[in-house]
Length: 139
Image (tube, rainbow, N blue to C red; front, side, top):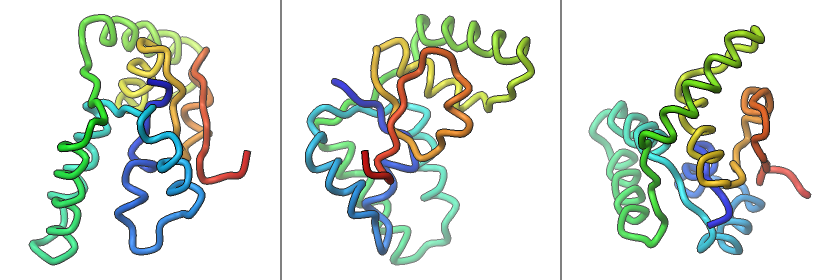
């Protein structure tokens, strides 16, 4: 594995007009990607918030396809939780706020030595030693 996909990347293919840049990179690097249980939670939470509709059914089908694929959904284990606590403490001491969910995702990326792929460079960019890529932009 090389990449950890954030919610805004993994949800992109399910959009009515997905980013061609993101789709191309998912196609190229898909077998090198994983996600985390926090992202999985965010995806399902977003789906369950929708009223019963065709759109909700499409999203449920998309999420089942991901679950049936070979993409790992990495757990939040003891090592990740310890790293998360250290990051949270450092961020609080520096006055740089970061959401607990973002720190959860970052701790998994750091623990597994993965590059986090996200559009949210502003928030994740404050986290020390975290490698980031934005697949919505040309590189």
